[in-house]
Length: 234
Image (cartoon, rainbow, N blue to C red):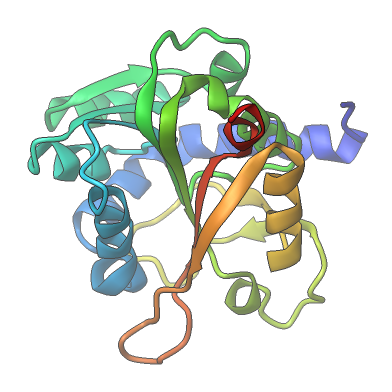
């Protein structure tokens, strides 16, 4: 799979922006500066992971590590990986099992482990990088395990722009901390998300739409998936 030149620029811009924004992001998350996370989406992903009583969880794109610590507090063996060393340093300082690993490291098999639950919580931001990562993840999953993705709800995140796949830019307006760099991210429609998972061999078990308690509108969308190739083998 080859990327268009603009895709390559945006993909490299994602990682660069997170290197620059690591401190501001850590401050924002730990101070509860994102209302939707504080009110609903943090608990939504935690509940989704815990409901099948997993023994081992891998949080891909773990950021400053709050989910790994929350799972560890529930007795779950959780590991967090992220491509940004500063985020991993900050995560490790707060306690937990964290490792520096990019999506490219995962794609090329450099992460030697298997777990019964994989999580991407607001971490699938690119186009080709997301597609390649999602396609390779069954190799990290124990038989019968689950892959849980929580991301922005396309209908809400679309705003006034056309409801079509394409690159967008996060300018961090309304966040409590000062973010030094804008961050590119790839917008996908709901049908596009589902098509990507299906094309990568995943079986979609459930879609959830956690609602903001104040507005009654979706605060996120969550996909709960299992390895569809196991169905064929069985």
